[in-house]
Length: 153
Image (cartoon, rainbow, N blue to C red; front, side, top):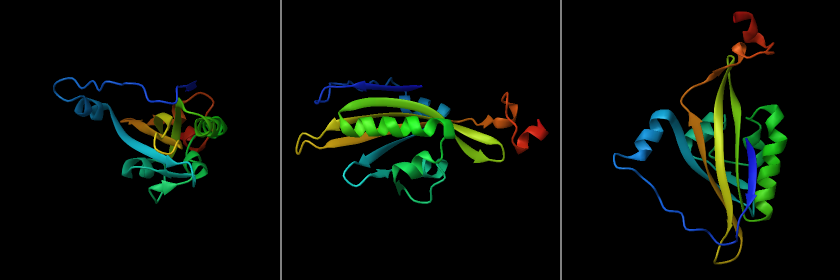
C-alpha cells in the first residue's frame, strides 16, 4: 500500500473518536502504535522506544536512510520517495512493509503520516504513527523463499 495525497496548507478539523471503554486499549490488543516526527531542517526522525527497537536502531533519533534500511529491499526506494514528496509540499501518505527480525521472521509495519505547514513560520512539519501488528510473519512459509529457514519448512 503506497499512497500520497495532496492536502491544503491548513489543517482540517478532525474529530477524535474514542468509544467508551477506551479505543486505545482495544488498539493495543492488536498492535503496538507509536507516534514519530521529523525535523525537515536537519533530516532527523524522532521515534518512540518501540519503533526504534523494532526498526533495529540503538538510538531514538535517526536519518531516513537508517530508518528505511530495516524495510524490505523492494520497498525502500518507494518509501524514500514518499518522504521526499511529503517534505516538499503539505501532504499525507501511508505505506506498509515488513522488517526482518532475523531467524526467518519478519514484523509487518504500517505507517500513516502527514506534513503540514507550521502556521508560525510556514515551515513544513512531518509527523506520523507507526503500527506494528502483534504477530510475526514466517519467511520460510512464503512461496519463493529460498533463505536459510526454507530448509526447516
